Length: 114
Length: 111
Image (cartoon, rainbow over all chains, first blue to last red; front, side, top):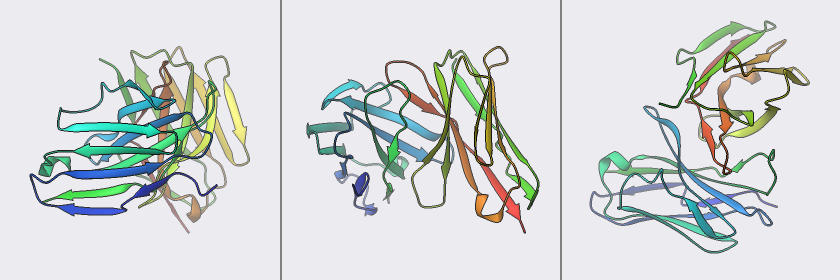
């Protein structure tokens, strides 16, 4: 397996534009997580899915953020409209069921909103 | 409020010495704690997991301790090498399959 695949690796967009980040989890993993990482706040959990169903979205900062998982092999994180303070690295991670299994992270998407 | 605290200052050590990183938490009762390594421009990579009923775990040059009374985990790298230079993150499993991360500690190992 190629691991968790995220696209794009880098995204630069203007304030007010819609941004869509994509993630392909590891095949067979039934949990998918979206994290955001900044120097100030570290790695924050935004939302996670189990079997394609959103379980906890309490970390989503505002209604401008939304996430979907239409099938087991694809998820999106959308920001509309984007703002400069959304600039961060966004990571997707997946794991399989089990109390003690680790999360596998993608390479991340570095988002810059100007 | 719930907090996970790691040394915000970077840790600089000489090659061959033991690096010790600290993770303290408040208002959590984690079932287990994990340590991850993150290199610049990459996602975190899992290193070790320790359960609440375990005091110590080892893997090659790595050792983790977990004190649920002190609410603290220590992460040791013995015989450190320049290749060990990275940011190390501790993560708590808080139930409901949520994993919450600390901000990480940067380690620099000088040759």
